[in-house]
Image (cartoon, rainbow, N blue to C red):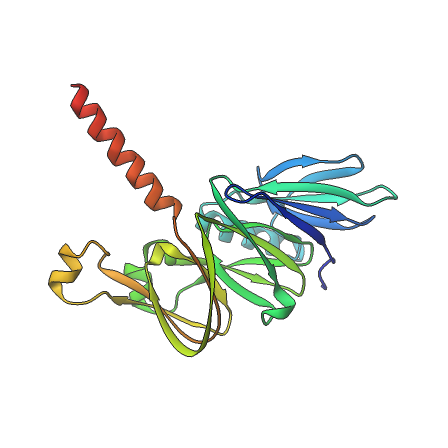
Amino acid sequence: MRCHELDYEIIGHDIQMVEVELDPNETVIAEAGAMTYLEQDITFEAKMGDGSAQGLMGSLLGMGKRMLTGESVFLTHFSNEGSQKRKVAFSAPYPGSIIPLNLAELGEEVICQKDAFLAAALGTQVDIAFQKRLGSGFFGGEGFILQRLRGDGMAFVHAGGTVIRKQLNNETLRLDTGCLVGFSGDIDYDIQLSGGLKSMFFGGEGMVLATLKGTGSVWIQSMPFSRLAERVLSHSSFSTQGEQ
């Protein structure tokens, strides 16, 4: 199934949204609750998965995979049933940036963090990608279960804070597991110990780092939501203790 062709505009700077323009009979799929506004003639329907599954068993399998990621088992399908171009907009659930991905230019596959997917053209397959290495499974944390986006159209993922794109040319890049947003499908991903025992326990950088090798693109976020949540919770607990 070839993807629908989408025109879009990223709106804003620090807290962004993406406005997608749909031709008549075009459809975009999105995470449940991501929609910000929609124009007339745009209808929406919650469906199990991305619409690529065939038959009942395929739908049930897709539902099981979605449950493993912690996301809703449903994706919302927005379609333009009118005779003119119409727009629908989506925003992320926390402050940050929206990254447009032209999958046709990225080998038709991108692997991203399990909660990074926001929206995509109909025809995009949104699947999960387990890490094959035991190190990734036991120590990867946020990087254990990843999402795989496949297709030849536009997809949109969101990330916290500032986002940069690093281009690797048969090189190796190491980074905090939470700061990894995604990478093109031809990059090799693994989890490795961060260093000696002193660095691991007292360095403040965590016990493990994500290691990416190969040729392709890597997207990195400066403020993972998990890090932000930890800081807020820590400050809240400290304030509560002070009041007592």
